[in-house]
Structures are given as structure tokens and as C-alpha cells.
Length: 385
Figure 1 (cartoon, rainbow, N blue to C red):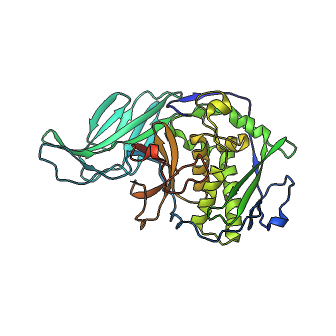
Figure 2: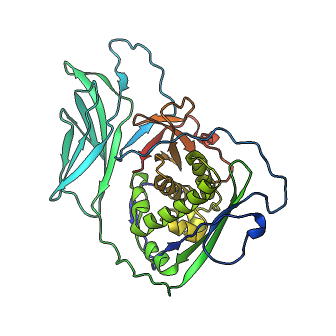
Figure 3: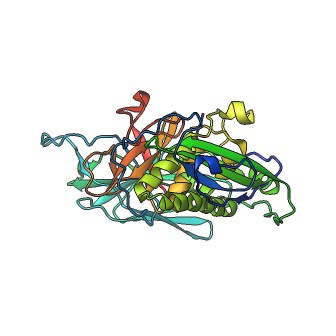
């Protein structure tokens, strides 16, 4: 469950993650609580190893360097020649939107769009039209979140003859004060979480043991909650989470490299790692309707809903150097993973790139497979940096 806005929920606390890597046969598997990760060539049930390969892995490239978001549909409308008195919706979107501050005022600027000579800028219910690629928003408050939409337009003789079908949007806010980060020591209490899954090609059993500091978990639980998906970057940029995500991604990649995996195949295992975490709504796990989690909170709780699992996956893909976005439907959050420039089989095209849909909520969803409820539905694509 999810809705828009930002709110805080104070619990008590914080958390840390320790992860080591290892690999071995089924007989070498240990039940101790040391932190490790490995692959095995046989299932625990002794079933026969499957040798067939899965579908061709996704080809992915480095992530972009700027964060922007845009609304889009899954397919580009067919290009037809419109009558002269009909507005053409064939202009593109800015590739980047930037925000800088001067006192309590925010300067929002964006990259020019070919064919546009002005831009309609919307803030909440207010709109204005500017010819320059910038505008100023006055009186920015620390506790407020702002979302600005930019629609490129071509105006001739006072009449709009062309514009973008969608609006690029940028959300920003002044950072509020944060609780003081705790000092973590080796003597602090920890808890172990073990996550197991079957490899994407059904050849291996993967597992991870993750040791988490209770003090860090309590700290993270005390931090603000960001409920607008455009603010989800805050969850993966938080200091402790960023370090933990890096450790997890590295541990999985090290074992994947030892077993001859490509980067694309490693991405499949990271996806299945996240899909293996049980799905629970915020009501079930936290007793409230909306409570997006920091990634290591999701691992510690060993459960999450669509936004929790999507935040975790986006953070891990970023640490692998794989471009990705959040897909924001009105009632659902998923992840888009960047495809190669030469790929002809993809779900979305935005920011000059092609993307595959990834469903995080249940094990078994394949890359590029979209649930029926969301096929053909409008969504926002929010780039992760």
C-alpha cells in the first residue's frame, strides 16, 4: 500500500550489516551463524539438476548520472499526420532537471528540448509559461516537499501547435534535522537473517546469512519516511544503507564471478534474492497503512511490500553498476532495469534508454513480465542515480 506525501514515524533506533562470501558443494554447507553466501549444485530435496538455460539475460549498461522522472505509457503512440488545427504531441522531454538554492528560493532549471520554444511549468495547481529553461520557486520551507512539472511546447502566433505528451517532473525538499548516528562496536547486539533462493536457471541453491546490528536498526527506524516515489532515492543514499547494499551486492557478485556468471546473470540472482523476501503489507508488518522502509530494515524484518522490495532491489542494482528506475503506478511500485541500446525486446523507453519491467513482490516473475493489472497502464519512470 502506498500514497503520496512525506511523513515521519519515530520508533526507537538503527542498524549495521556484515556479510562475507563463500561457495561450496551441498555437503560443505554449514548451519553456523557466520556471515556468508554460496551456491550449490543440487537442491536440498535431492532433485535432479536442471541444465536448461533460462531466457537470454538482460543486457544492461552503466547508470545515468542525473536524476529525472517522466510520466509515460508502455508503448509510443503511433505517429500519424494530424490535421492543421490539432496539437501535435511529438515533442520530447528534458533529459535532466536541476534544483539550486539561494536563501529560501529554489531555482529550477532543465535541459532544452529540440523543437520547443517555451515550457509550461506546474507547481501544485499553479501553472505558468516560460521561454527560458528555468524558473524560480519562492519561499521554500524545510518541512515541505515540492513537485514541479515541465511540459515542452511549440507556440506559433500565440497558438500551441506541438507539445510533449507527458510532463517531466522534479521533486525536491529541504533536508530536516536527523537523529544523531550511533557509534557501532563489535560488542553491540546483532541478529542473523538467512535468505535462500533457487537460481534463475534452476541449477543452484543460493543462500545468504546477513548479520545486522540492533542499534543500527533502531536508528534507521527513527528516520523520516518518504512516501512519494520520487523521494525513494533517500532510502538507498542513507549512509548505513549505502554501505550495507554495497556489501551485499559485492558478496553476491563475488560468488557469481567464481561460478562464471555474466553481469546480466548476476543481476538475475540479485532480483531473485529480493523476490525471495516474504511479501507483507505495511498494516501486517508495522500496523500502519504506509511505511516505506530503508533497505536493511526490510532485510531485518524479513518482509516488505512493493515499495520496500523495489527500494532494496534498486539499491542493489545500482551497486552492481546497472541502470534502473522506479516504476510508479497509482497503486503499485516496481523496478525497471536498463536494457542494452541494441535491444529490440523491451517494455519502456524513456530518457533516451530502453528498460525492462521487474516485479519484486513474488519469486518467479521474469524480467520483462508485467502483471496483467498493469499492462497498458500509465506510469511514472523515476531514474535512480
